[in-house]
Length: 244
Image (cartoon, rainbow, N blue to C red; front, side, top):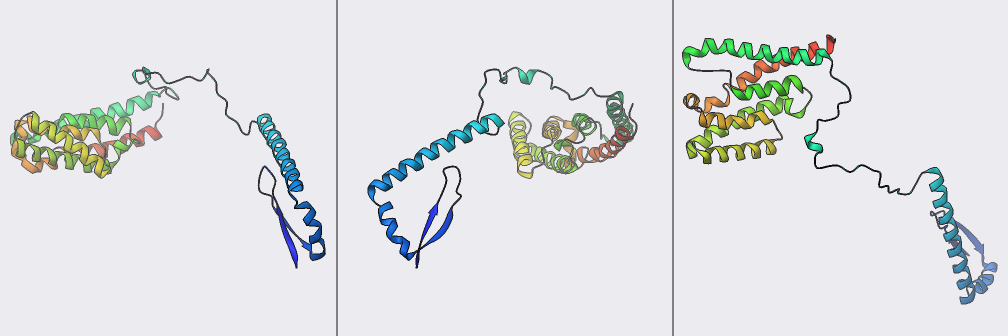
């Protein structure tokens, strides 16, 4: 038989175990007396304090631990949102030209389609598609430019606009309810696409669109986005392969 003893240091657990023979257990009686235990506890506490002081000073030398507070750190200002964002680099001429050319081509094609559809009283050139062009051509990697976000929000928000007009009729109640429902819909479906939020307002106030009824969910918003998506692919290709 033997007695097992475990020892730990003050910084981290580095326990070690060893066995004492039975004949040595008598020696432990002296060490286990109250006076001896008090002395040993005090000694251990002193060692812990020394080790903590050593480690903290060592950490300060190495910069490994500790918190430094300085009054020189710049705090954000309430006016920062009114300042232009700091760009990592100045955009090249091609980064400006190709998105602008894509927007011109998009509106030109939509305008040509308007001439074809004019006899039927339809139009493809609506204001929300101008905002969609800015999102797709200028920020093609942003979440709002994702195809899922664009089509889910365009179709859903357009249908919500028709529903709001059907329930509340023309007026501010339909606009407010339609816009609120669109924002809730986009958040719930994870399809945030800001230009789509204007579709209910466009339908409620656009007398020429009322005859479309729920076809408005697909035309002209979703149909126009198909054309814009194709042009976006061309713009992205030109930006990546023809830089100047």
